Structure formats: structure tokens, C-alpha cells
Length: 230
Image (cartoon, rainbow, N blue to C red; front, side, top):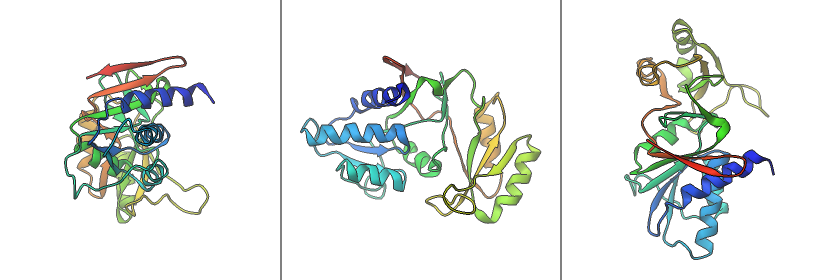
């Protein structure tokens, strides 16, 4: 196993230490969050935790939770969640993050907004001093608006393209039936201001800029894990 895989598991395991019996959780998507789901499942099977339910953020998260035997529920039943954990494509020391590499950003952000406590987990390669360095901002876009959105992004100075599927022809289609656009802005001086500006573009449904959501983060290294607080 690579050091990054080990680092992800260590970081995810630390996040799961915050889970208590009876909690309803937001379950993130992607490889790092999946490690947390597996650890959580192990604790449930061992009897270390009981009566824990999860709200998944994607079909992938559903599959991981089913394999881990974690009971699932919805935001209709539990509109306020005790805790959520998820990975990040990039995060800064202020706990602002870019997410969306796995294409689940819209549901991930909805779930994050419902969590009393939200924890990011990542290996140290994802940590940066400034968001946007060698990292595009993923955007979920309604299919009818793709071309107008691309033109507006280019007018904002971004290099933007529709994400293409691997293993099938055509663009990626999200769990919500929308398309993904990856927009490269370079260093982002003011992530909050950019997020507001992007939300003003009609047809752009959500951004991968997670600003102010996380309460803390666990960062895995080659041989340890450390915590970052807001």
C-alpha cells in the first residue's frame, strides 16, 4: 500500500473517532471518505458503536456504506446531521477547500451544510497555502447552459472545459443528471468572492469551492496524522 493510501486511512480513522453511538452522519464520497466509511463499519460490527445512520452524498457513497453495513437514511428524515466527514481535492490552512474531483460536489455541499460538525480528511499532498494552484474548480452545470457558462467563465479569465467520461463516450453526467465543468483560475486571491461571482452565473448550479464549511481537518503524513482547527 502506498504512503498516500496509508495516510488517507489514518486521517479518516481520526475523523471516525468523533462518532458516537446514536449519531446520524453525512458520508462523503471519494477514496478518502470511503476509508472512513470502512473504519466506521468495522466499529459497528465490533460493537464499539451502535445505532449509527448515514446520509450518503453519492451513489458511490451508497455502495461503500452498503458494503460496510451502515444503515442509510435521508435528509428528509434527518435534516440536521450530527457530524459529517469527507475528503478534499485541495485545502488551505483556513480549512477552505476545493472539492468535486469525484463529481459529487452538489450533494456533498448540501450534506455539509446540514452538519453540526464537518470534518475534512486528506493526505498532506492536498494541503496548500493558496487554493487554485494546479487545481481546477469543478462546477456542476445544467446541460442546457453548458455553452453559455463556458463563455462566461472564459470572460472571467478561466480556462474551462467540460469533463469527459472515461469508459463511455461523451461528457460526465452527475448523479443529478447534470454536466461538470473544470475551470482553472490559477491562484485564487479571494475564494469567497469567486464563489459569489460564480453563483451569479445562470445555469451554474453549484461550485466546488467549500468555503467556511469545515470545523477541523485531519491531515495524514507518511508516518503520522495531525489536526488543523479553524
